[in-house]
Image 1: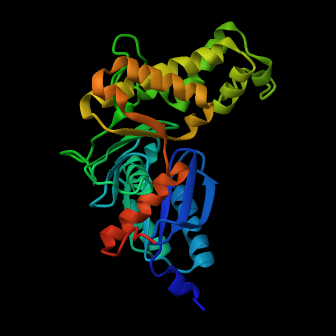
Image 2: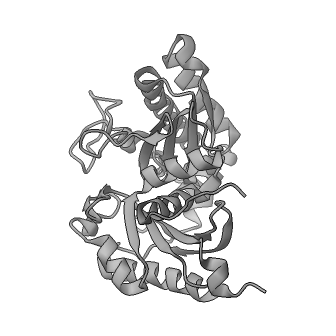
Image 3: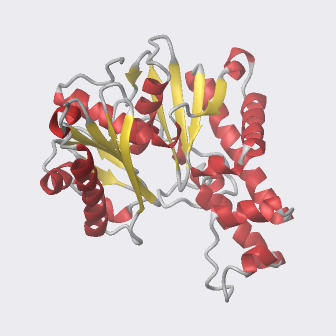
Length: 333
């Protein structure tokens, strides 16, 4: 009989730490998810509550499954993966300068490695696709914000300063776009993210009147914090302003992906994140716009939801942690 310690010997825990949720899972050496936990990211994103919530998830998984060999954490922001620090984060502003790896290692007792969340997700997606050496892959995350990662020829492409594939900060509407917290105006984040789609719908409803489905969710206009689920529900009910906000976001994302196709020429673009819940119609609009704005062989790239699903980030973070520890990672079963 295999006891917990032996069962966990080749395992790592991966965490996807974002603006709305913290997702953690135990992965074995073949990349199979053995146990999982999710919680909402504490409101305000203050460092101590988020660290505590993350460590609690990891300790719960360790208690359930046995101690893992390493902990990998993908964090929404610019992350120095070698020093284990968060340099800055639009999604998690209080985390600027936090020594995340050291803090989580102290709380969990596990060798801990951190990376950008999209980079971790890109690696997790590459592994889920079977790690083909000849695949040039772009992974695009579309949630609270927009991120991306590149895996080219079987290697993560980080760039000269470890900040490649900052797709959400690329300029799409340079003339009239709204300003992003990064200082850029007309960035893709301000047009196509879940946050941007919800903001566009709310602005239209403020001007033209609120649909009944959203009015019922809050007593006063000032208190109405609109989220993507409400926009999606209003769109299904035929609300023209919700439909227009979703359409504008899809067109902008398609334009951003077209830029990726023209600059990098990946064979596959994998999409993941909460905005994919808008459904197949949204995805088809994104595909059509991306292909219309690229040309020739570039337009033939596969554009599909991530094969690894919502757990790509945690899986990639766990695998990268094992690799940095020098342990075997994602050994075929």
